[in-house]
Image 1: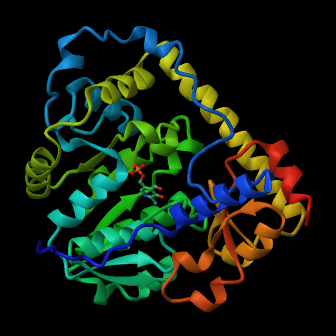
Image 2: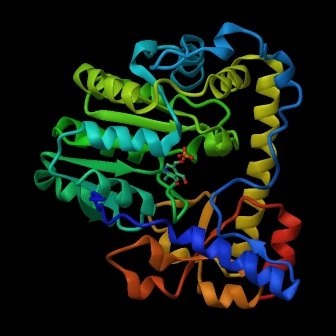
Amino acid sequence: MQVNQSGAKYSAIVGIGERIKKLSAETGEKYLLLNRGVNSVCNIDLSQVVKEIDFNSTKMQVYPSSQGLQELREAINATYFENIANDSNIYITAGGMSGLDLIFQTLNVEKIYLPSYFWGSYMNVMKIRNIKEDFYDSFSELTTNIENLKNSAVVICDPNNPIGGKYSDEKLLSLIKLLNDNGVVIIYDSPYRRIFFETDNFYAKLLTFPELIIVDSFSKSVGLSGQRIGFVHSVNQDFNHELGIRLMYATNGINAFSQILIQKLLTSVAGKKAVTDFKTETCDGIRKNIEYLKSKKLLATEFYHETEPKGIFVIVNKSEQELLEKKIASVSLSFFTRKYKATAEKYARICVSVPHNEFVEFMSRF
Ligand SMILES: Cc1ncc(COP(=O)(O)O)c(C=O)c1O
């Protein structure tokens, strides 16, 4: 059998998780899993909202529209865009990863710029789609290099994975404006932002930028990575047309249950309460954990010159091995960079979205 070999690889993070499970089974000892990328301060409580779902409805049981349920697109417009976007510019995808893949295959660009410390899946999807990568260290570097960015796209992730740093919204907006005005495509992929905001008018401010594509996900913001659902928004109609066609033939529509569930979470009283409770408890846990790291001088402050450490990840000044000796699972920062591998070996990415008491129990071992 002849196979198209892309050269893309499974994430190293999956391997770390399996190694820890084995270690834990062999030694009978408890490990704190900070290697993962999911919120686990608490679960979202869906018990009230599922009562509102009619499982015997046609909407639930037959093919949804390939662009996504109209009611869900309206709910996203209201919650994310202050109701001033056009529902027809919103496309429901099977999570952020699938949204990114569709964006990468739809765009015709020379290369895509990623942050120097980046989520590895970007590059793997780009490899499968035959797109060249380049890297930027900071917003200042992009600003001074604007002439060389023509025919390229730039990925912005804020707060970023793996660093967890958040730029101010003013800085984000001025960079986006500069890129847009110079014809550089911006892929705004910030699935962690909404955990920290109940209401947020930031996306509404982005509607004037024709070169900007938003991709978002409900995996992190409402803790439902198992539902595989997210969305893409752009005001560029050529892009939207091609994206819509590709979405149709890649998916034949996104799971109707997950679409109805998210629509209820965004619109009903019980749904909104579940989201608010989840975000309040999650943010509280994250904030306390970051404060604790600061007080113990474990936070690698050298990574937060232009940004604020916000979560759900942060970088600590301990290596993956040093953390493992204290039974803490993490991911070496070197997995997240091509440019700075040697320096990054000394640091690890940890997920700080875990219960505070457990976090302190393990981190106090340093
Ligand atoms: C930066 C970033 N973008 C997008 C995603 C996609 O998540 P999902 O496919 O679950 O929506 C992730 C998941 O870890 C991520 O870290």
